[in-house]
Image 1 (cartoon, rainbow, N blue to C red):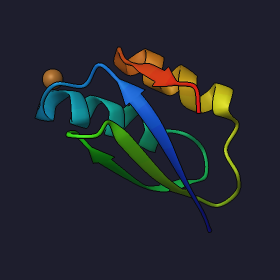
Image 2: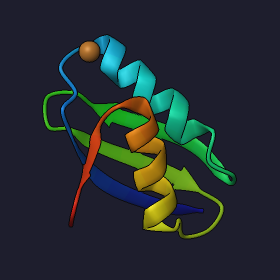
Image 3: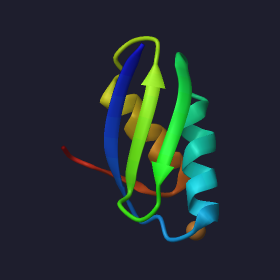
Image 4: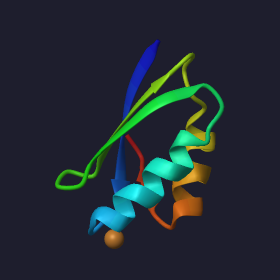
Amino acid sequence: MVNTTYQVQGMTCGHCVSAVTAEVSGITGVHDVQVDLATGRVTIDSDQPLDTAVVRAAVDEAGYTLVEA
Ligand SMILES: [Cu+2]
């Protein structure tokens, strides 16, 4: 299991958290998604290291922006 933390910009409420969680959870191999609204941190448990481009696409789809590490 791989645990990766990303920074997401633009989330303001629980609805935003739900939208990001739903999209990121849909990525193949993702087991768990934890979003911290206060910090914008999104922590993902996955089978293998994720392609950042795939994570970015999912976050974009939800309507938010993945911040470069
Ligand atoms: Cu919101």
